Length: 92
Image (cartoon, rainbow, N blue to C red; front, side, top):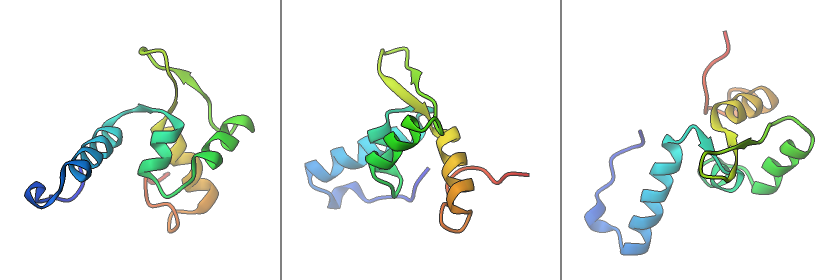
């Protein structure tokens, strides 16, 4: 989980955006656009990794095309390095 936030200081739009981000961080399957919103990357780079078969697309039970968040973190961690990409698990 992320850091604690005092929700009394947020307006409605900020609160809803924060709730969406928290929900997206907890998902295992995530859309490329949502992944780009919770990581410092553009959605175009995520779609490029899908087109070049670096990331695979999985059809979510809800019918959307999603990616595995852990697999995406692992790919970007190996591509950019652990210092530049601190998300995901350390390879052993």
